[in-house]
Image 1 (cartoon, rainbow, N blue to C red):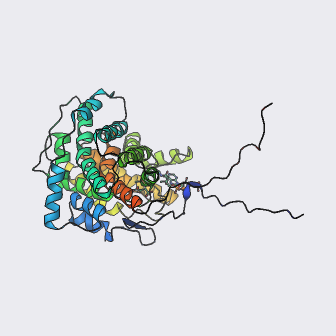
Image 2 (image 1 turned 120 degrees about the vertical axis):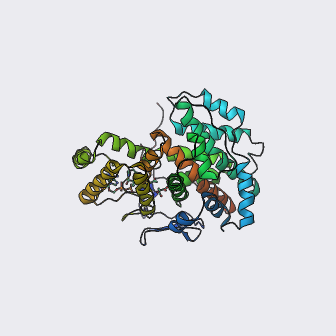
Length: 375
Ligand SMILES: CC(=O)SCCNC(=O)CCNC(=O)[C@H](O)C(C)(C)COP(=O)(O)OP(=O)(O)OC[C@H]1O[C@@H](n2cnc3c(N)ncnc32)[C@H](O)[C@@H]1OP(=O)(O)O
Ligand SMILES: O=C([O-])CC(=O)C(=O)O
């Protein structure tokens, strides 16, 4: 009798380094520290495109012609207002609820309102993607306003996406330098291959559940501080530190307590996040505009201390957090801003998943008790 020994299965915790599928939407290359959306370097898109053009590129694979862009903008601008029951649902939620819970709930209601929810054809999913893209600014802006005891500001069809988002949040269109920094952040946040929230959306889609369900799940995955929640967490860190001269001592103490430093490190990039230089440049323009060298000094000191102490570089959330703070957003609204941007990438991936679907269902290695029986 021969004994068969089976090799223990290789377990890759967190799916680190595992390639699970192909995608034509974006390419993250840590060796060259580059990020391409449909082949275009993200820095070029951030320098020269509107957020609407980038959304169109992610969904369609090509930048829009003038005629295509005009049609898309008409469609998007006509859908910016919230349905009565979406607004009423937001009103019914306590202000103690995190804004990410509000966005997640609002997307559920938008989905429940849609008679075509179950239609997963590409044309229907594209229409749903544009609807979510158009309405998320209203959800996020209204949530910040109601928390401040302010009235809803109606959308303006004469403004582009970034201008209108700021208009609905603050009741005014800020200086062009602020609008531009906001536009850049939206473009940089839009897409990043198989990150945790996008993968969540693809897992949900792989069961043939509808697009709204996949987006709701993705919002849940983005909320965590190891992923999108880090932009909010960075601002809490800045508040905790207080001033630039305290950054180094604060870091020593935090590392001694084995804390993860929010806004630093990345699963894929180990030598720096490709998007940080563009976002840092946008932050610098805001620092100059609002005359806040104190904030810039705190930023620089913490980064310098973290790099010299651990050689761990900042990720996109590090410059985005203080940038959103300077723009006037409340700290807990930062991750919903990420949702409004990333919904473009999520929905592009949902459509791509459906084009060549396979149920996503990995295996596990059981390490519980051996078989046993009652009594
Ligand atoms: C837009 C985005 O979602 S970008 C990511 C946003 N998230 C954050 O900023 C949260 C803080 N960062 C982190 O927690 C991590 O860097 C992650 C989750 C992003 C990536 O984690 P992983 O790829 O799993 O890296 P991993 O945890 O293996 O880190 C390797 C080592 O660096 C350390 N490390 C990594 N990031 C950090 C950090 N931010 N603070 C302190 N130590 C860190 C780990 O503790 C680990 O040390 P060890 O080998 O002594 O145990
Ligand atoms: O790619 C990741 O793991 C996280 C990230 O930077 C993103 O989603 O933008």
